[in-house]
Structures are given as C-alpha cells and as structure tokens.
Length: 291
Image (cartoon, rainbow, N blue to C red; front, top):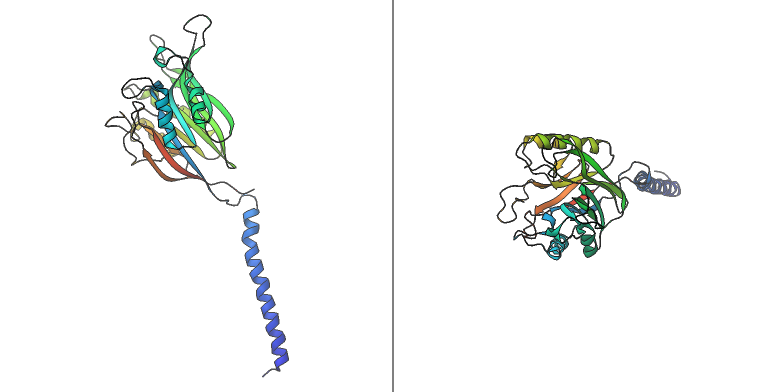
C-alpha cells in the first residue's frame, strides 16, 4: 500500500485533470456555436395569404375596415395579398388599398401591380391592380417580377410576360427570408398556370436562403400544373381546410408553401366572410446560422 501522502497527491492530480476535462467539454459546444456555419436558435414567423377581393366581402359589399379587421385577427407577421386595388375604380372608391391597409394595421407594404392603366379622368391617379405583401418586420429588398400572363384588359390576349409576382426579403430578428405573393390564372385551361409555375420557380432558383411562396393559385395542390412546385417547396397546410368560396368552401386554392429549410408548426384556413376567399395562416420556424 502506498503512503497516505502520495495517494493524497495523486488524488488531487486526478481531481484537477477531471476539472480540466469538464471545462474543455463545456467549452467545445460554445466554441462550435460561435463558429461560422453553426446552427443558431430558430425564430418564429407567422405568415398568411389572403385574396381580399378588392375589399368586398362574400356579400359583395365594399368595406375595407372589415378587410382590415379580418387581417388583424390573423395576428400574422407577414401577409401576402391578392386582388388589391390602387385607385382602380368605383368598386373600391378609388382607394389605395395597399397603403390604406398598411396604415390601419401599422405594417410596411410593398405593392406589385399586374395592371397599371391611365387615370379614369384627366389629372387623376393611375389605375392599378395587383398583389401586395404586408410586413411587421423590416423589408430589406423588394421586386415586382414578370411571369406569363393572359391579360383580362385587352381583347384577344396572347400569353406574354407581365408583372405582378411580388418578392420581398424580410429581416426576421436577424434571419432573412424571401416572401413571394402570387395570383395565378383563373381559367379552366391549365397551360397558363403551368407556364406561371415554371416562371416562378426560375425566380426562386435565383434566390438563396429560406423561401415562403403564398397566394391564390386558382388550382388545388393536387393539380398537375402545380406538381413542379412540390420538387422545391412543400404545402404548409395540406389538411388546413377549404378556402373557396368563403361560405361553405369546396376548394383549397389559396396556399402557403415553404422551402425545406423551414419548419411548419401549424397552419389552417380561417373562417371569415370579409372576402369571397378564406385566408390561410401558418406558424413557421426559421433556422438561421450563427455569426
């Protein structure tokens, strides 16, 4: 048996070595979390899409305060809007709906016109109709992209590139996400929608980072013309309920879709008669990298 004093010294050395090992074991994850490319905590983002029917409800009555209340009830951070009038005509009292809704909700707004027409009367505002994105978070960049369209404003239209595919880059507590708002062709012939899907995917392919594409697709998620979307994105609310018409819906044509690097916590269509469509809201988690 060793003398007690030697055993005591060795015991102290073992204790010190164990303490150093424990400190190193604790330090490794901290260093990894601070290193470039490491995973940082995710951040929540609540997004929605809503075809607002130019501010008219299921009763066909124009009431932008009702529209604003329906949007407020969604409690969303970012909202893609479709069928937005800006000084368009008497149906919406020539109101700039994009700016008015942003003001009522205290949100930032980017409006992307599909149509930009001459004023109804000399000296009036230009008549515009399109899509928009509302955001509670800072908008770092915004762009109105062209996709294939078949105009509703000209006789005998032919498919041609036209604006109205909105993209904003939003800073969500340090996480940057691309949000797109779209409104696809309504006609029974799916060929225009198929071309629009291809055009949108080309735009998305040029962007890096997490992506959220929302809108009125005028087709259900299972439609063949939408199939290419599901190679790059996923449907956030496959069981979220119908969206059209707002009263007793029979179709789910309003969609929230996300890139694979976004986690979907939950999503649903919300019953309201503030439009002829129901909105869809989704709770997401963005996974950002540490700095």
